[in-house]
Length: 162
Image (cartoon, rainbow, N blue to C red; front, side, top):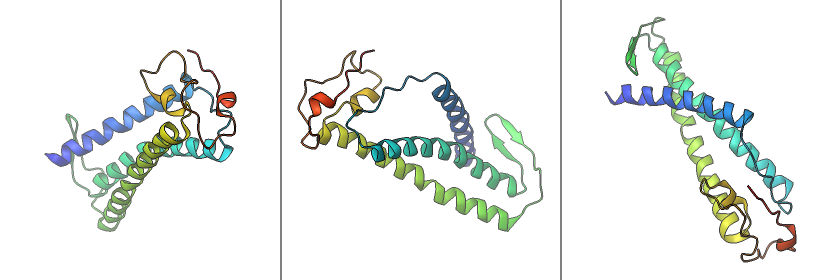
């Protein structure tokens, strides 16, 4: 029963990731990075985001491949998926290892994402973290405390109006 729920949640995650990535590439409004944000941080932020999307698309596929490689029928959501190949133990083991090891990578990226947001909020005190919030204010907190790391944080902060 737990494995059926796990597989089904994987398929739902995969579908939601596809829809979310489509929306992100087509309709998402992304505020610009702060002018004082180094290019390397901008590249790391983009790499982290697209890495998470890649893993959200890749991870469920490795689990599905593992289930198919077993050569047995299995339940997925409300359907019974028939056996489509004979069982291949080495291939099943390979997909199991990939699926198990790659499960830790998204957790690491999520942790780095959280740490980066906290760093921007409490150390740099720039607008990066507040802009990501779904309940963000109509204006930024440009009048807040200045960052000890920015040469002229007040002048470098863009005013983002929605």
